[in-house]
View: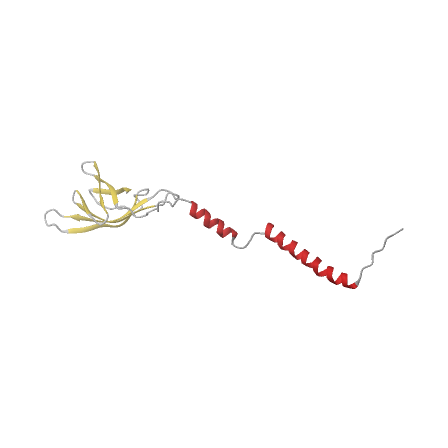
Length: 158
């Protein structure tokens, strides 16, 4: 014998809102548990940034330039240097160091200096400019000084 349930209209009216409310609550719970809340990645990145130790900032500009000079008459090579903004002497040349730069560690190594080089006549103390521009350590011939007796090139930036 089969049993039959009698459902009254007032029971249907009460069960439907409760059923819908239960479904909504379950859906909300699932979305909270499994969905990525807005801004969660930004909060994680912020926490990672706080946990990291600050790196020492890279300075492209150096304070000291090391140069080498060749005296073609005597075949003597001298290493000398100076601070940015100073003028240094190599034989009859006066070298004004304007700037020295190096590349960051994550790029191919390169060092370059902006130099102004004057040939000073020892008798009259008159200066004539023989070079003004950037000299590169890796490619000295790219921007070379043209002088009959002396050659100068960049060795290092510190």
